[in-house]
Amino acid sequence: MRLAVDSESGNAYIRDMKSGMSCSPREDTMNTLSTIKLTGSKALEFARLQTAGVLLNSFQSPNEDEVLGLCISDAEEIAKEDVGLLWVEVSHETVDDETYALARRCS
Image 1 (cartoon, one colour):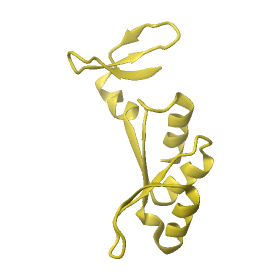
Image 2 (cartoon, one colour; image 1 turned 135 degrees about the vertical axis):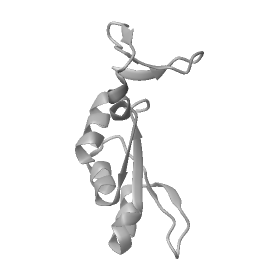
Image 3 (cartoon, helix red, strand yellow; image 1 turned 120 degrees about the vertical axis):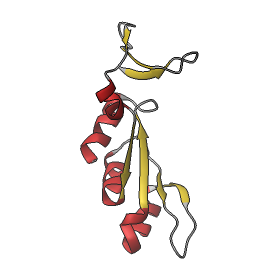
Image 4 (cartoon, helix red, strand yellow; image 1 turned 90 degrees about the vertical axis):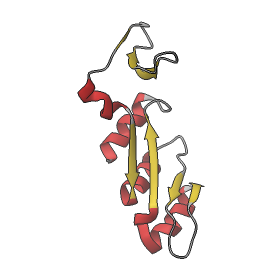
């Protein structure tokens, strides 16, 4: 299943990729089907468990600018100083169900 957006109306709907059937998600489930933002040690844990080569990001610190697209080894170096600077966003629209479920388990 994938969350999709109708290009004309802008309304979200869920599409079963095997059957082709679609339906509107319940309002109370919309947040669970969108983007998960993991920060700190949870972001690093997710990246370590992920086999698709997730790139992490680092918030701006007093000494460094924000950095996007960090590999795990670079993120681990930042984590030695301040793991709270790390973050990653996982969108259900851009990853498969298994990857999204892993992000939910890490959150």
